[in-house]
Image (cartoon, rainbow, N blue to C red):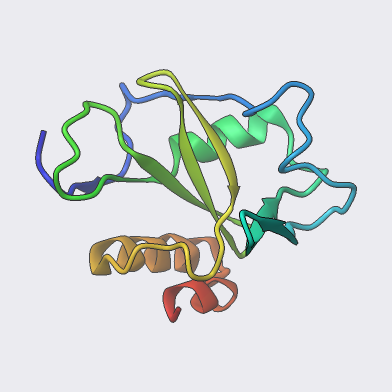
Length: 142
C-alpha cells in the first residue's frame, strides 16, 4: 500500500453504508439539513455531526462510491481509512465500520478535515463539479 494515499474509487471498489448503531441515534435528527449538536464528553465540548433526515441508504451508498478515498501516511490496510464525500454543499466523513466492506458517514466538523493539500484540492474539484464549491469553502479554509 502506498503511504499517505488519496484516490477516487475505481469500478471494483464498492463499499456499503452501515449505520454505527441500530436504531440510529447519535448522528440522526429530525431536520432536513445536516448540522451539529454540541455535547460535553470527558469534560470537553464535542460536536456531533447530524445527517439530514432526507438522506436515505441508496443515496449514502452512491455517495461512498463517488467519494474521495483518503488514508494518512503509514496506513497499511488495503481499504481507505476515510472516504470524504460532498453532498449539497456539505463535506461528510465516512469511517470504517467493517474493514474492506462498509463505512458510516456523518457531516465533517470544520476543524476535523486533515490539512492534506491533495485531499482539499480533490474535494474542491468535486464540489466545483457539483456546483457547490462556495458551500464547501468553509471546510477547505479551516
